[in-house]
Amino acid sequence: MNLPDVIIAIAAGIPLTVLVACCAFVVGAVLALPLAFALRSPRRLVSWPVRALVDLLRSVPILVWLFILYFGVSIDRFHFDPLPAAVLALGVVAASYLAEVYRTALESVAAGQDEAARSLGLSRVDRFRFVVAPQAFRVALPSISTFSLTLLKDSSIPSVIGVTEIAFQTTAISRTAGSGLTGYVVAVALYLLLSLPVAFVARRADRQLRAQVSA
Image 1 (cartoon, one colour):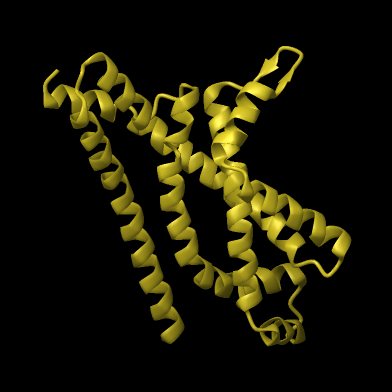
Image 2 (cartoon, rainbow, N blue to C red):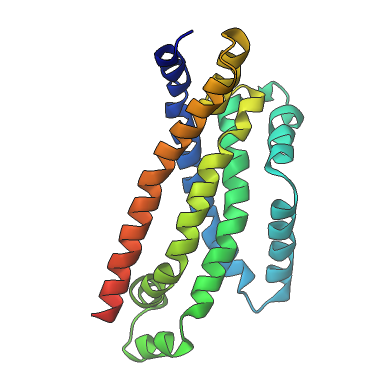
């Protein structure tokens, strides 16, 4: 198999790579918000169990969670297909990491900001939406961007259960066509091409947010 054919075959895994990474990020970003609030709760009956859950999710390798969902969760005739199992496993683990990012960012906002907004008569929702959240987002953005790149690379893990993304395609081509190192070099190039736009957008957004703060 010549190089163009190898590139085309491996590039066929790009859509699922992007789909898994994006869906897992959305799942993680949404689930992380209530976890972050729970971690900041002054009530130990709330914060301690959530802290234990977050630490557990972060301590166990993603591959183990993936196997638990795909091979271990079976209720009557229900069984996870590879793609939903991949998204859920990566998404739940992502939530545990992003929860810490959110918590740190929220705690970085000075308490006086919320008190000033309260004195203006803003509701709790409006205080969070217009005062706390924008400032916390500026702090969290670099960490969120870095994690999104990590998640993109971790999207290769579901190849072990048959999700036909880049890593799966690379292994299949290397075994059947004997492309050897060539296939893996192509895979590296494709991951790099996918990562660069994410890094560019993240840096651009960070610069714009810094400019708004200094203005």
